[in-house]
Image (cartoon, rainbow, N blue to C red; front, side, top):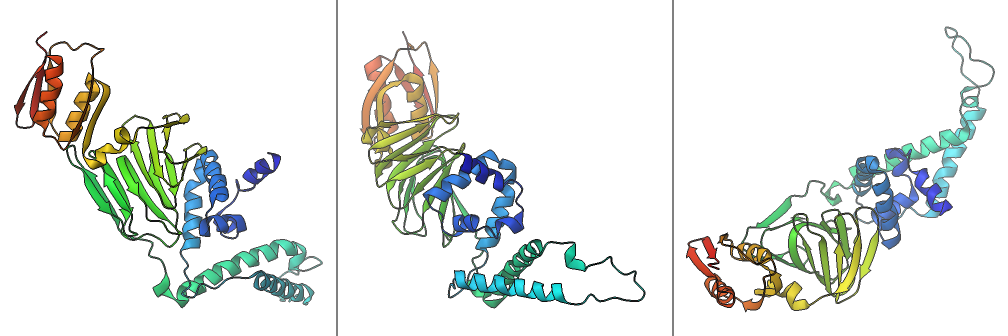
Length: 359
């Protein structure tokens, strides 16, 4: 724990020049994995004021793409560093230049005031920046475009859709839900943002697939799962196949196996449980399911499912619940089934529904 604390403190005073030359930071940007992802997400959660700086540094590192993808080997690094030290040594032993019109400097030369190690570090940073600039100039056609257009799909109440992403992933987007994704994914990551509910069938490949929903991030490689988070409700992640890792906004993380559901409260508390596939996933196959559902939730679900407005007249028993399964049924048939079992009446006027309890 002491080592982790020291490492956490190490980056507090970093600027862009520090980040773009830090090996661990570069590794996270170029080759993210479970360990470095967890570290940097935890660090950013504790230092939110550094988020913009970190993203800017990461963007600078990602901005350079080589057509032939050369590697800067350990030997090349050592040779470059030795050349820098050699140049400094020659400068250090050179005779100081004096100009008659300028007051001579105190005994010693320029380098006596600045440690060689500091100068070497500064030159190394400048060298890295120069190398990035040269690479940028060398092959501009191979650069990743930073301003990739974003695509947003929104389903209003009463509407569902199926969306095919550029990588072959298929998304079933529920009503009153929004999904946002780039027109073209980057070479390192497939990132989408979700508000509402969607079922994902992720195309398996080497690039990680990341779903952002609220403050949580769901990491996958190739799997099928359902994500739901509406309004102030908890986040629900139901895994069907494969494996996912969910990272909360506070840096905590949990891994799900098939047939497990994660329930994450707004405060960050979470737990796992089993789930009924038909109840949680049936919506994508046009199943409308009520399972001991209270009256207010029945009304909300009908309004969301059919895109209507429902007005209730009369007193409804707070203990009233309803169970039923409908597949592809018209609204009138569902209303008839609900009202017949409870003695209520209904009236349909275009998209306005009135339910009356005469009791």
